[in-house]
Image (tube, rainbow, N blue to C red; front, side):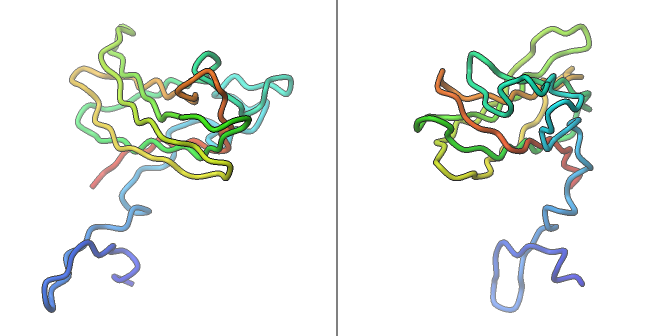
Length: 154
């Protein structure tokens, strides 16, 4: 049982250093409709929308309440939809009045196959809202099949 919960990160002779496996480190899903089903609430998708294809000029966003002092794990599963391009995982941090405080961003190279990209981010002081973006880093669109935002407890 303990071997399933610990992820080894280093070994020194008979001593193994590990951390709690990621499936036990995160809260439940914070996003509404993380599987991006058209017509569900959360992203404003409708059956008439472009589906899961997004770009820097046509993103989808969702605002989520966050707690100061917690770290967050943001991830997306995406692929290039028309041509090779760069995608990004992005969170804009806002205060209780909706004022922009900072952004956390990770740029990645997408490929023809779906791949998962993730980043960990710490909200700045006074942040109460995370605006999670589904978008590419260029006008060339990417296809998104899944998105996730979870608080890290350990």
